[in-house]
Length: 146
Image 1 (cartoon, helix red, strand yellow):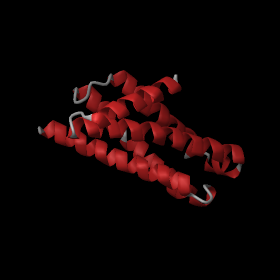
Image 2: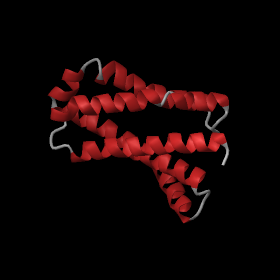
Image 3: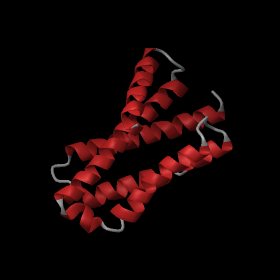
Image 4: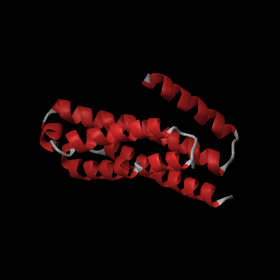
């Protein structure tokens, strides 16, 4: 494996494990409000660090469009930094706010777990039956997002 492949494999594996952990924390939280600081901090760190994906695209390390990647990462960061972090009382003081917060984290988690699992399988295993299942799940996820 090349240095580029090893780096991307490590990046995607860390991202997969991080999103899996965060999604599991959301699903197992008895009360989202009592874990709000932890969850908000985790999603902020994860999503802010995802800005490196724009650099990956600009440098040509991945086939993604820099503009599309910037739009996705920037959109999520906009929600996190201008709404969730700026107005945490509004997010966590009402059922609607908590539902929106949990909805964002679960939607992002489901999407990113599939995406990073696909990239890890693609970079690490180079194909196989897991790739077919992950490719199909990514297609279903993409179609449901449109």
